[in-house]
Length: 128
Image (cartoon, rainbow, N blue to C red; front, side):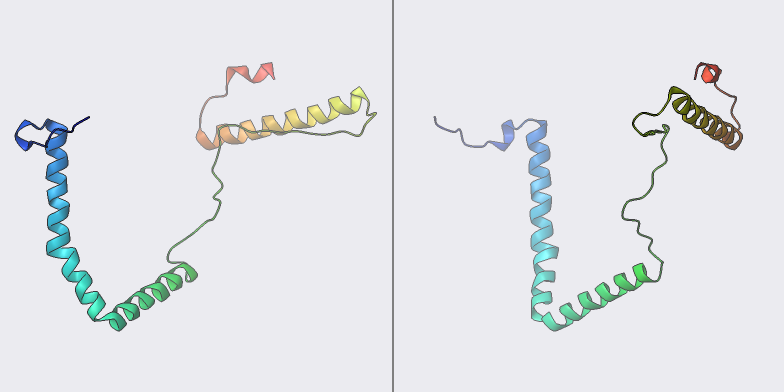
């Protein structure tokens, strides 16, 4: 299979955009990036000192609390999950007591959320 030579005059809109973007990147590299990189290599000790200073400043900002970081933030959810486990051989009454305790806690939480968000109670509350 033989490839046809690229003809910019027959290019579609995507190819024209790609060519425009490619030329822009090439211009940036030759006019801005390459001269900056040459200066950075010529002044390598200054470059290393600047980056070390930026690293120390960044670590200081995290350590000082200016920039806050939470590894695993707690994200509020619209759903709650509760589970319980009883000893083997527990009676049905014990299970029902635990379920009643969970239902009461759920209703207290529902009341708290309703008062916090100032919304009307759900009509499905009686179904639980």
